[in-house]
Image (cartoon, rainbow, N blue to C red):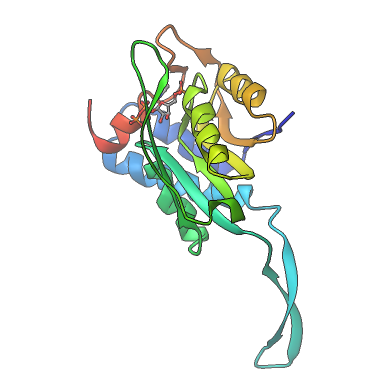
Length: 209
Ligand code: PRP
Ligand code: URA
């Protein structure tokens, strides 16, 4: 069974509270999602492997550390996942970015794919799949399935806000994918919105309704 990590750094929790406030407008919402994403990227990459490297400092030669291992890919689920990309890229500038376009059909609540463009060497990269909301889990389950179909083998899912129902669904469908979240909220409501949640992440990011 995969692991779920609830990232409880005080800065993440504080900024999530600001993000959830319905009075927070689109510009501040975008800025805060970027900041929280950067903080989450820091936590999610704690286990990156290191290797020794020889460096000549102005004082002496030294054996120091640098990141080794497989290259990284960041894959936002469109649209709302786009809001997390810049925060991740600011810490991981060499990562390549793939995109998966999915929307949740409001009647069936099932994900519908409309776009997929991934790095050509996707099977050689460790992938960070990012989406602010993990509600029923349908979108994340479908996106992970698309990534696996295209050869991805090591995937982590990163979401700002989740709920027990969505976490369980993803863990059941993809027991090899660890999940990193800023919060595990109480539940889903009758429209499959997370409670207390933050409302519709895509609409709040892009000012649509
Ligand atoms: C939201 C969100 C997730 C999905 C979560 O996207 O960004 O992708 O819903 O719900 P689920 O876990 O029940 O699948 P939405 O479908 O509203 O599309 P958008 O990003 O284009 O706004
Ligand atoms: N998608 C959102 O944007 N918010 C929710 O609460 C659930 C799905």
